[in-house]
Image (tube, rainbow, N blue to C red; front, top):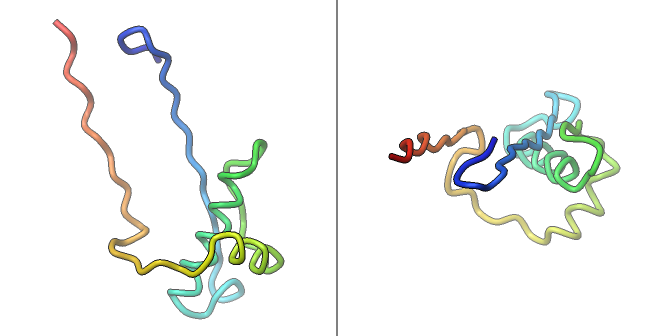
Length: 86
């Protein structure tokens, strides 16, 4: 898509963790989903990544201590379309 002479592209990175194998509690599932999502973001070939227990140690070490959550990670935010130029 072109907008005002600029090429615009979109993309998404999706992390998946499955109950109960990847976490027995909500916080653990969310944390493991985050790990999988960050792996997908860092990959050049995959935009969807399933959680694997072996990614835990290296990724948690790289990211450091978890920060407190201030909003739901399940929220998808969309910006309304820009008005057409006149």
